[in-house]
Image 1 (cartoon, each protein chain N blue to C red):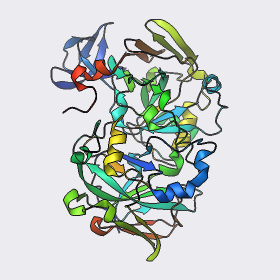
Image 2: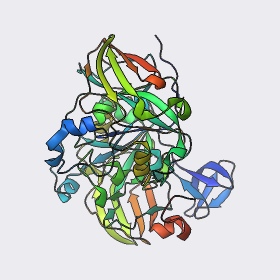
Image 3: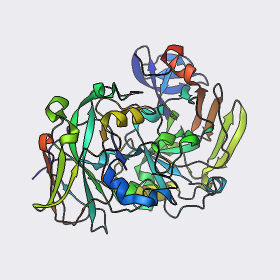
Image 4: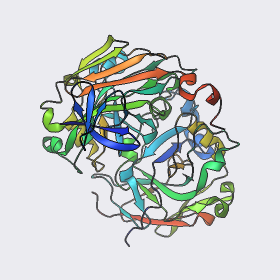
Length: 220
Length: 261
């Protein structure tokens, strides 16, 4: 299967520690070194251009890597610049939502930016189509299901976000402008399921459709 | 050769220096350097920045030197050109410049050997990688709120061809605040040099034309305040000027408090 064209042109930003499951999994460790306290601002990262691949891609892991974390998430796709928004008017900037798989080489620590772990080529497969807001309905009603080779391995609700979409846009756009075409992922679960080379992955997201790709047998 | 990207008379142009104070556009027009709007000399694709890549700076921040490069990324909102303004928000108590050699990738590559690294370099420019330390948190540190603020990463003025920089690992870096030198160093003191950084990054991701690597800064940090004029200069590459403004200087009196209504 060849991969489909990308439905986005901007920069993809992501956030960790934005769901109750992740906060619970990290637990008391957040208060200890090296973190020394729960995060105050959204904990952001960037999925650069080399990571973006379309529906149907076969993602090859870097040399020496035999496992990859597959985190199902949803991207907020901006239809207008979001700068210094309040929660009350944040949604005016949103064009739609996009199903995304954020791939990471397993890493337990959020202390330093995880560039090697999160930015290898192909580490961000995205669905073929942005679903307009009106069609997507309420994100809180959506559950994301992840399948490896047809078997269910994870499901997560989007009802448990620490910062919901309006608050997340407000807190990020306080210091950085999200441009038309940019994407802000609403969060990935800490320690998502790990896939081995050869795995076929499917993520189903109700009104947001589905996303399929595979982890190639051979490393790059 | 060195070249700038500028906006002039409603268009975007490549320009070359013409004497000390002027620029020459491709069609021969001569314009004053102070009259144009300077843009970053390349339109960046992915921008990498290095933390703690000079031993003296790592010590200054009370960190031991890292064993692997400490890399973070920036987004397009952060970039701005020569002679632009950067905003110091009202609640900041410590905002500092960082003079950095920026390497511009010119040829794509994956798993590039150190010995081939310079073949993938188009040239160099200067970056001023401002940080506001009040917002530092120990989560993906240095976090984007510190390092990826709108217009807080000036780039420029020139893209200088690789061929014109025989040894990028022996260049003097200097920062002046209102004309007073506050930071001095040499690219010779990088912990991970340019070929090592290219080899490291390309070991797991494809580098592409337009990618930039901001290679870190030596010691000599100082707080900068509204009205300060900050010159970050690298020998043979250029002198990048930026002015700090407060919220009123940035938004105008009417724009403070909320986004444009």
